[in-house]
Image 1 (spheres, rainbow, N blue to C red):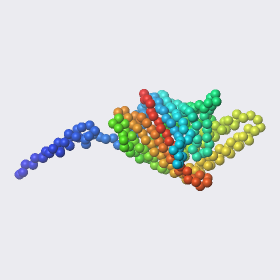
Image 2: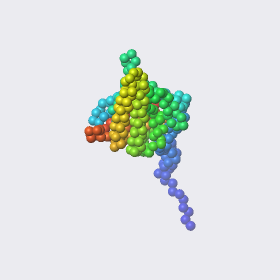
Image 3: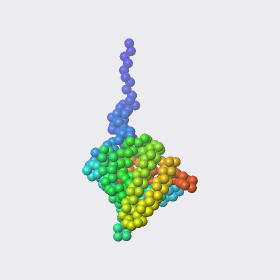
Image 4: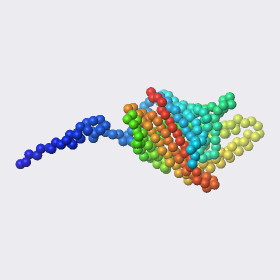
Length: 285
């Protein structure tokens, strides 16, 4: 009977050695993009305080220039209380509605807006009065709420080429139907915020013209609402996020996005708009 001995080869030895080297072999578990995203989200959820700075702008088709650019910053305190503050120029347009809101002026100079939010049972609720300017618009720039929403949506997550030793970059693309539904929901919230603000101002007017003013404002708002709903109904929405994660802490460092909307206007002309945001997380505690 033959005595079979295992044949030890140089290639087998090399393979075993490589397997024992961290990050190089079969025994090292490489996290999937989905696992990296989940760890980043759970790591952020465990923090009591954090700060971030960001900027946003609207870019139209065939134009390299951004419109309605503004900067914002935020601070999370006590785990569930968030304050968002815009900075100059401080103007945002409710995309597709045709309505533009300008920043409140201080001594003749534009200043920023501030809004506070609180997380209750996983939902973010505005603490500021309903009629305050940009209450609805500011909520869409909450990066914590964005990541939480992304977690529940249909999406594809891929590791981005160019990630370094210290960071991992994830490309997150939302499924078009989910991206469109989310965009429609955000725009509807903004339109209702605009209505509340306009009606609050009309209520401050005294005299016989008050009722006529309220009726006119309702008419203008309804026209804007109808136009927005018609545009979004047949629009195509594509939203892509890029999330940079610290490999050591698994915490988000940067979150950028581009949400592109293709739609036909009232003159049957094709339009493409893209809302671009970029947020840098500064500190965690």
